Structure formats: structure tokens, C-alpha cells
Length: 329
Image 1 (cartoon, one colour):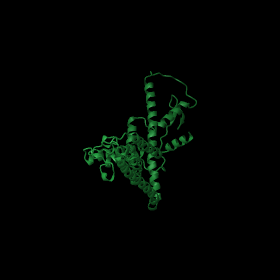
Image 2: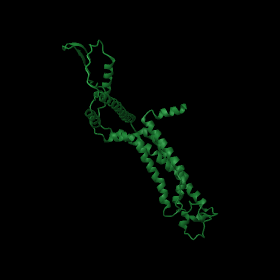
Image 3: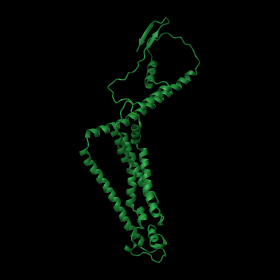
Image 4: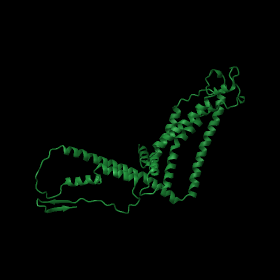
């Protein structure tokens, strides 16, 4: 149980870990889908290859676009690429880094599907059984009245009456499956070697400082958007609560209550100040719309050395003659 908690904490630590977790889940889902998929070859010369290539190519395309859709790097990359420049210049290196990260994660599940299908071999046998030279194998049925191409197209259908009490389809299937597995293992070996060589050679030709800067600012964009969304949610909650309270207060009848001047500031004033601070001075719909437009079209510059101006509220107590009794900022 503790190990499971550690794994969940790792995947919840940042968006990159969440994206890795989603990609791993998609890869496992692709394996599960393939193992539960009932592949039935049509066993017809004009449809075998078309159906097999469709099963090998269409699901990986779906999984690829699904990986692009659920990857958070996609949204961050598109926001950074499409946004107006405003007060902040764009960094093409950050966009390229986000695109590379998105592409690598999105390709994981499709590659798993293709490798599993090649290592299994059923799709390959259905697609290329017609291309095998039948003279190499013994036991080919000759009294069926069918030509060679149609007989070879029926090899994936071992239960067909054409191959009754014959080991010919098993021998051909075993032969084609060996080619399929060889292609699958070759692709896997190539990907592993390519990744290892990239890890070893890439640092020799790149600026480590530039890589660290690109990684930092890509993470910054993700964190900044998260904090902005969270702040908007908190502001919307406080704004809605204040609108509801104001609505109920407006329904009350006007009454006049005369009380003596208080000797101290009560806690209600502090609560009111807290509410006003959480709203950040945005108390109208027009102000909020203007703020959101300004965030998109003119994001703030990356400089926090300048302290932002924060307006202060001055509370003054006066008597009936207008004389100031108490004032506080």
C-alpha cells in the first residue's frame, strides 16, 4: 500500500509525471485492446492485405491522436505558439521542446500496438500469406479446384475444408510468423539503440545551459497557467458568493438603526477586508472581462523585481458635525 501511495505521489507531483502516467496507461490499454480483439482474416485474396494493414495502421492512428489529446503539453504548446506577443516575447526553443515532449509521449501507445501485432504475427500471416512460394512446403492440396492464390489466401483460416488433415497451413503460418517476429524485434532493437545513442551523443553537441533554460521555461508556462486557472476559480467562487449575499441583502426592507460610536474595530471589518483582497479589486463583469483579455493579449513581462502597486483602503470615523474621530489605513 505504501508503494502504491509513493507511485501516486510521483504521478501527481507535476504535469510531466501525469503525462508520463497517462502515456503508460494508454500503452497498457493498447496491449489489452489487442489481446481482447478477435482478429478474423477474410481469407480472400483481394481483401487480406487491405484488412490486415487497416488493423495494423488505423488503431495506432487513433491512439496517437488520443495521446495528443490527453497530453497537457499539447495545450501549453498551442497557447504559447498562438498567443500574441504583447509584453512577453516568444521563445521558439520552448515551443520545440514542448512539441518534442508531446510527440514522444503520443507515439508510445501506437508503437506498442504495432510491436505487439508484429510479435504476435496473426496480422502479418493474413497480409502476406499470398506472397509465400507454395512449392517450398509439402502437403499443398491439389484437388480443390482452386488456383494457388486463393489457396494461399485461405492459409490463415486453418479450419477451412480445403486444409482438412493437412499440415500445410501451419507450416506456412509458422514461416510467415517468423518473418513478422523478426521485423518486430528489429524495430524494437532499432528504437532502443536509437534512444541510447541519442542519450549518449546528444549532450556532446548541445549547450547544457540552453537545455536547462528551455526546460525551466517550459515548466514555468505550465505552472503559470495552472496558478492562473486556480486563482480564477477562487475569484469566481468569492465573486459568486458575494453576488448571492448581495442579492439576499437587497431583498431586505430598509431600516434605520442608530447606535453609538464603537470604541474599537470589530472583526466584521477584517472579514470585509479579506473578501475585498481575495477579489483583487475586481467587482464588475466588465473589469473581469478586461482582465482576461489583457492576460491573453498582453501577458506580463517576466520581471518580478518591480513591486506591484496595491491600492489601500482608508477608513475614517466622523461625528455628526463632520469632525474626524478615528482614521485608519
